[in-house]
Length: 69
Image (cartoon, rainbow, N blue to C red):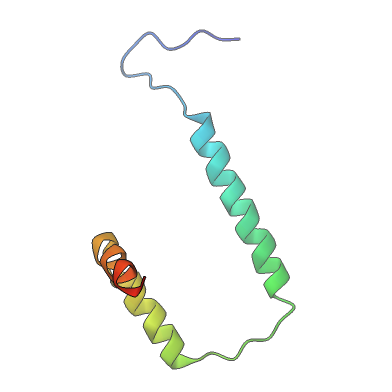
């Protein structure tokens, strides 16, 4: 086992963050592979709505979500 860095320009590695990111990527790859077995028709209206939602800020999404409840 190595000792932690003693110099301020030698940052620690956040293994938990990298582990979480790897798990997300692994899950997305698994879902992508599973989805390749299905054929979906592209709905331009749905794609436009998704892009519109993606452009909203977090505050705006939260506000609209509260209005729907």
